[in-house]
Length: 125
Image (cartoon, rainbow, N blue to C red; front, side, top):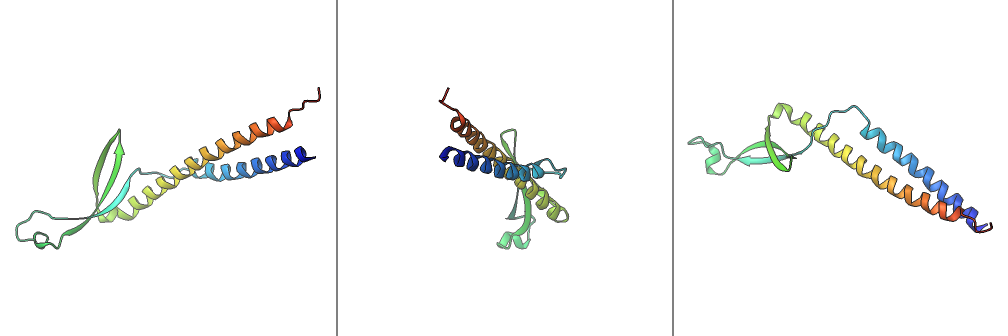
Protein backbone atom coordinates (compact mmCIF):
# COMPACT_ATOMS: atom_id res chain seq x y z
CA UNK A 1 0.00 0.00 0.00
CA UNK A 2 2.92 2.28 0.69
CA UNK A 3 4.03 2.18 -2.95
CA UNK A 4 0.48 2.97 -4.14
CA UNK A 5 0.30 6.07 -1.97
CA UNK A 6 3.80 7.01 -3.09
CA UNK A 7 2.77 6.57 -6.74
CA UNK A 8 -0.29 8.72 -6.12
CA UNK A 9 1.80 11.51 -4.56
CA UNK A 10 4.26 11.43 -7.46
CA UNK A 11 1.44 11.59 -10.03
CA UNK A 12 -0.16 14.52 -8.19
CA UNK A 13 3.15 16.39 -8.12
CA UNK A 14 3.67 15.75 -11.85
CA UNK A 15 0.16 17.11 -12.55
CA UNK A 16 0.90 20.21 -10.44
CA UNK A 17 4.17 20.79 -12.29
CA UNK A 18 2.35 20.40 -15.62
CA UNK A 19 -0.01 23.23 -14.59
CA UNK A 20 2.97 25.41 -13.59
CA UNK A 21 4.68 24.61 -16.89
CA UNK A 22 1.56 25.67 -18.80
CA UNK A 23 1.61 29.05 -17.02
CA UNK A 24 5.27 29.55 -17.97
CA UNK A 25 4.53 28.57 -21.57
CA UNK A 26 1.83 31.24 -21.82
CA UNK A 27 4.47 33.86 -21.03
CA UNK A 28 7.03 32.83 -23.61
CA UNK A 29 4.66 31.78 -26.37
CA UNK A 30 2.93 35.17 -26.30
CA UNK A 31 3.29 37.69 -29.09
CA UNK A 32 4.75 40.56 -27.06
CA UNK A 33 7.76 42.37 -28.40
CA UNK A 34 10.89 42.03 -26.28
CA UNK A 35 13.90 44.26 -25.86
CA UNK A 36 17.04 42.77 -24.39
CA UNK A 37 18.87 45.02 -21.97
CA UNK A 38 18.70 47.16 -18.87
CA UNK A 39 17.67 50.80 -18.62
CA UNK A 40 19.90 52.85 -16.34
CA UNK A 41 19.77 56.43 -15.17
CA UNK A 42 23.02 58.29 -15.81
CA UNK A 43 24.22 61.76 -14.83
CA UNK A 44 26.70 63.25 -17.26
CA UNK A 45 28.24 66.44 -18.56
CA UNK A 46 27.45 67.82 -21.98
CA UNK A 47 30.78 69.55 -22.59
CA UNK A 48 29.34 72.96 -23.41
CA UNK A 49 31.43 75.75 -21.89
CA UNK A 50 29.62 77.59 -19.10
CA UNK A 51 26.93 74.90 -18.64
CA UNK A 52 25.83 74.12 -15.09
CA UNK A 53 26.92 70.49 -15.55
CA UNK A 54 30.55 71.64 -15.55
CA UNK A 55 30.09 72.84 -11.97
CA UNK A 56 28.69 69.52 -10.75
CA UNK A 57 24.95 69.74 -11.52
CA UNK A 58 25.05 67.05 -14.21
CA UNK A 59 22.34 66.33 -16.78
CA UNK A 60 20.08 63.33 -16.27
CA UNK A 61 19.84 60.88 -19.16
CA UNK A 62 18.80 57.26 -19.67
CA UNK A 63 20.73 54.50 -21.36
CA UNK A 64 19.93 51.01 -22.55
CA UNK A 65 22.75 48.50 -22.03
CA UNK A 66 22.68 45.03 -23.55
CA UNK A 67 25.13 42.27 -24.33
CA UNK A 68 25.08 41.65 -28.09
CA UNK A 69 27.35 38.92 -29.50
CA UNK A 70 29.43 38.96 -26.31
CA UNK A 71 29.96 42.73 -26.20
CA UNK A 72 28.09 45.25 -24.11
CA UNK A 73 26.39 47.90 -26.19
CA UNK A 74 24.99 51.10 -24.74
CA UNK A 75 22.46 53.39 -26.40
CA UNK A 76 20.93 56.62 -25.18
CA UNK A 77 17.17 56.47 -24.71
CA UNK A 78 15.24 59.66 -25.51
CA UNK A 79 12.76 60.55 -22.76
CA UNK A 80 9.80 60.18 -25.12
CA UNK A 81 10.69 56.47 -25.57
CA UNK A 82 11.65 55.78 -21.94
CA UNK A 83 8.31 54.28 -20.82
CA UNK A 84 8.14 52.02 -23.90
CA UNK A 85 11.75 50.86 -23.52
CA UNK A 86 11.24 50.11 -19.81
CA UNK A 87 8.10 48.15 -20.64
CA UNK A 88 9.81 46.11 -23.37
CA UNK A 89 12.86 45.33 -21.22
CA UNK A 90 10.53 44.29 -18.39
CA UNK A 91 8.74 41.92 -20.76
CA UNK A 92 12.12 40.50 -21.76
CA UNK A 93 13.01 39.84 -18.11
CA UNK A 94 9.62 38.14 -17.56
CA UNK A 95 10.24 36.00 -20.66
CA UNK A 96 13.67 34.92 -19.39
CA UNK A 97 12.31 34.10 -15.91
CA UNK A 98 9.48 32.04 -17.44
CA UNK A 99 11.98 30.20 -19.64
CA UNK A 100 14.25 29.39 -16.68
CA UNK A 101 11.24 28.28 -14.67
CA UNK A 102 10.09 26.04 -17.55
CA UNK A 103 13.50 24.36 -17.65
CA UNK A 104 13.46 23.85 -13.86
CA UNK A 105 9.94 22.38 -14.01
CA UNK A 106 10.83 19.97 -16.82
CA UNK A 107 13.95 18.83 -14.99
CA UNK A 108 11.91 18.15 -11.85
CA UNK A 109 9.21 16.36 -13.88
CA UNK A 110 11.83 14.09 -15.42
CA UNK A 111 13.16 13.26 -11.95
CA UNK A 112 9.63 12.42 -10.78
CA UNK A 113 8.93 10.30 -13.85
CA UNK A 114 12.14 8.35 -13.20
CA UNK A 115 11.09 7.94 -9.56
CA UNK A 116 7.66 6.78 -10.71
CA UNK A 117 9.25 4.20 -12.99
CA UNK A 118 11.40 2.80 -10.19
CA UNK A 119 8.41 2.68 -7.83
CA UNK A 120 6.21 0.88 -10.37
CA UNK A 121 8.69 -1.82 -11.37
CA UNK A 122 7.61 -5.11 -9.94
CA UNK A 123 9.95 -7.83 -8.80
CA UNK A 124 7.15 -10.42 -8.64
CA UNK A 125 7.78 -12.06 -11.96
